[in-house]
Length: 131
Image 1 (cartoon, rainbow, N blue to C red):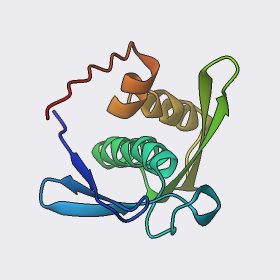
Image 2: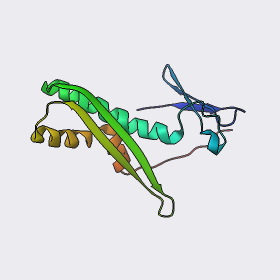
Image 3: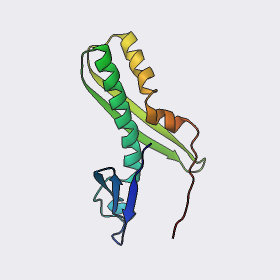
Image 4: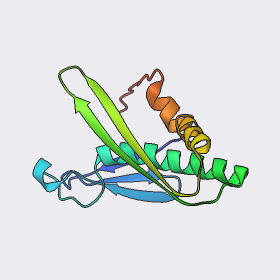
């Protein structure tokens, strides 16, 4: 189970995220009132899917012994505020020699990454306020 903490103080909107022993700085871009000192919340969400996809594919490719030099995963989030829906557009580029059957398998494995499963499954957010 992943657990992170986000702390925002009086610096407008700079947030320190603590994940285990790692610290990530998040912020909003200047056009939204931030100082652009870190990644935006949208970028963090897209990065979760891109990273999980990359790692899942690397594990699979290594296990299969397929010759792939690099995996590049781009994720763009498109929101429809009117319908309260979002679409994640994921593009995967693989540098290596793969036949068509292997390429189809890559897409199947990408869709099996844990973050993909989380985002396409039922999500519940429970909020507790402690003062």
